[in-house]
Length: 329
Image 1 (tube, rainbow, N blue to C red):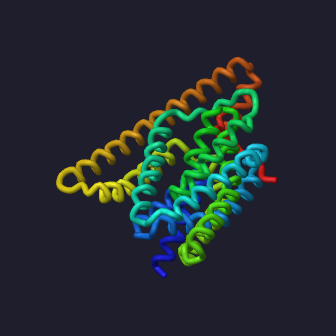
Image 2: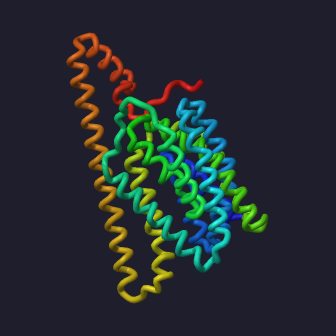
Image 3: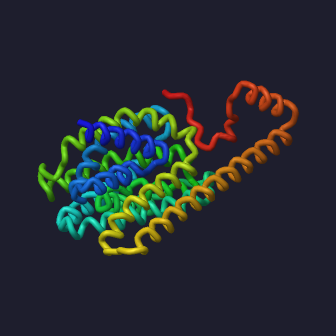
């Protein structure tokens, strides 16, 4: 019972991170299951089965808060499902001994990518034009394959790519990626069911992760408006890097002073990424404040009066809100 309660808490925290950041439910959950000694294929299969429920709840919540671009969802979900089914088939055919370092390597790489990505300023400016299918389809295919073989990766691959394009609001990137993941998780689960059978799913684990995720999904869709993605991404990336480094170091059979030295080096890199993330967040907020002040000054006294009234009421002007969300439908 204690183990199931811990897994439910992990599912809750993982969904809070995923719903606020657009990634890391699978990475966080799969990393924990690997550390607990679960076989890679069973870990990925169980996480994806739980994600069918959590992503459905997250997608509904994001839709209610106006965070979904359905055009993007329809163009990325089907290729993602194809990639996820193929990835599940590949992982199901690999032995546990061979799959463990492979899966840990993918998770470690994605965690390192999160560290680097969120240590730099996030691009949130939007340019004209729409994302084309020739960009969205290959992106979904690759993200789906990585997601199934690594036990997570849909968000870390798809979300940054859409953010960097600069053609979508950050909140809509996160909402659309989370909503499309429902189809991806379903396709991966079918692939694992064919490759592993029903015994490949750890149903108590699935239930615990699902319960925690369902509780967190509505709250996460709301938190996406206020949580600094910069800090959250760097923090989660460091946790994933350190936990999966354990499996890789064990596979490489590193002993003696090399093992603690490597952990110290990774921890130092994590700390540096957090420092850079804080500095980038402060620069971004300072730039927005200066731009708002310049815009208010150029607009004249009436705009200044409105801005002063808004500030006195404790509200955030629209041009200062990085991921502002309209009132729920």
